[in-house]
Amino acid sequence: MARTATKTHPTRKSLSDFITERFDDFSRSQKDVARYIVDHLDEAAFQTAEELARRANTSSSTVVRFSQALGFDGYPELQQAAIEEYRHKVAEGDPNGNGGSGAAALFNFDHSEFEASLGADYSNIEETARSLTREQIEASVSALATSRRVLIVGVEQMAFFASYLRHLLGLLDVRAEIVASPSQDNIQKLSRMDEDTLLVVLTAGRAHPLILRALKLARHRRARTMSITDATLSDVAEHSELMLYYSSNGPSYIRSNAALMGLVQALAHGVYSRDEAAHRDRIRAFKLK
Image (cartoon, rainbow, N blue to C red; front, side, top):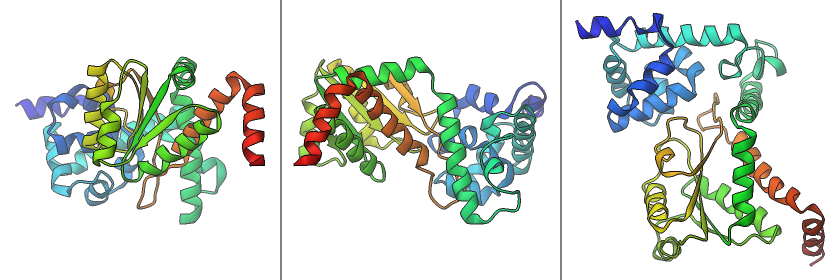
């Protein structure tokens, strides 16, 4: 009886809302599926359980069990609910459903895979820009510009973006260090966090254990925290004072990082704009070295 009652939820609320409300009840692997569906609704609507599982870094059986945990008989019923929500968003012109924007605005419907990838990047940048508020950006830029010490943590593929953000801040005379692995030297960097430190973490999908460890330590040391993540239901949210979301939808075998790159550069530009004259002279001197 409980399953029958639960299955009627799409008529009362969207699939994304229903998943968000039930999020804390899911297992760890089911949370990976939940995060991916909420932030990649179009893929859940049109991909098989096997394809969705690959994107969410889990198994197809987990996708099926997740569907059943929501009260559906299986993945096809969940997919139908995703299709209905996606169509509703497209009809309203919601960029999260790519309605009237993104790839359709760049290319014809019958586009190549190359064009689909470029179109997804375009759409991700637009969605990211729409999802962030001016208050979030101003608070994040101010934190980067005024903190005596910035510690940036990015593991695996996020290590590149951590290094790039450090480079951009270094040009602006902002002291920044990076932690890209759980080595002894990096653990010592984390251990030196204090009230004058801003901890910045970058994540894609489920947060690396080192990220969560760093955030918990920062809270204990009363350091400020900023998370940059592609998951609305990210497990870093409860530990972060500031959180910036970026979209990473894409048809490729990897997540799209176009919006993340744009966000990193926009943050650095925000710091630059606070004292453009002084920073311009410093960057000019750096180029002449």
